[in-house]
Length: 335
Ligand code: NCD
Ligand code: ZN
Image 1: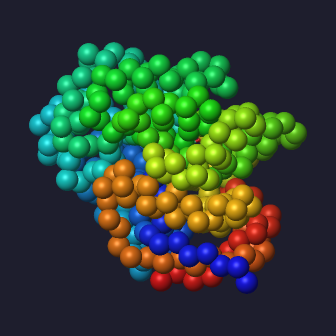
Image 2 (image 1 turned 60 degrees about the horizontal axis):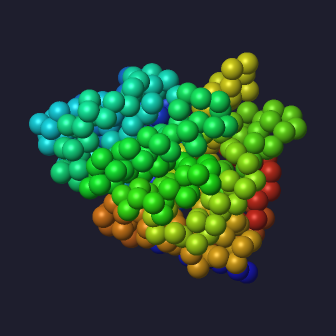
């Protein structure tokens, strides 16, 4: 039987939510991942030192038996330097959302006025705090990410010492940006390596394929696959696993978010194997992130095997990507 071993997998963009949902989903990530960058878009968002510490404790309490490092983030506001100094040892990154662009982002940035943002971004550069960005405008849905490229250019050129992560990229335009600015990096989800807009609305409308940014064209997916399969050193895996209860997904007014955490590594093995690139998966799911963020996760070894596995139709009240469908790889052991 074909097997593949991964060491210290990292999920560099994860939504763990809070309360009952946190208790339900956190153990699923903690089972196979060594750590994850935890998104701050709670209601209200994570924006004080106390919020960060308390949320981290709730996450740790939800995963008592597994080793799992939640790398914490703050919700971007124009914070001052003194505050950033006080919080820097508790976070790895600050997440910037344009206001209202996705789930729980209402308190985000409403105008990208570089001079208003300068003190915060300069302080972050000096303190070595990474800036993670949800890069979408409020334009036409298929163009939102491409339209955001000029904002990435403005940020990258004005703050050359700030590490900027283009989160969950979905377009060739974003892939091309990686070569243009040394301080721009990207995360890629597993669902954007699998889906195009056709899988969302091309046939019947598929709520469990609906997320922000929306899956794009085949040529965009090809561009993402190329850099992921090559484990381009500026690209990392970030699932953007975003659980919503079934009542919010199979509804009039479907919430955006695809839940992939429990099957992400299995699907990645299937994709990388299909293209004969399994040897690059380690860099994509861990080594690149360790280099980019300068982190050193505790040891964890996951052995996956090529074996048909039926994805559970539902985890608690959350339907995963490909729920009830068969995928080609499964977890063999975790140590
Ligand atoms: C995310 C969520 O549900 O929090 N939704 C999504 O579609 N990806 C927010 C986000 O990352 O955009
Ligand atoms: Zn997200």
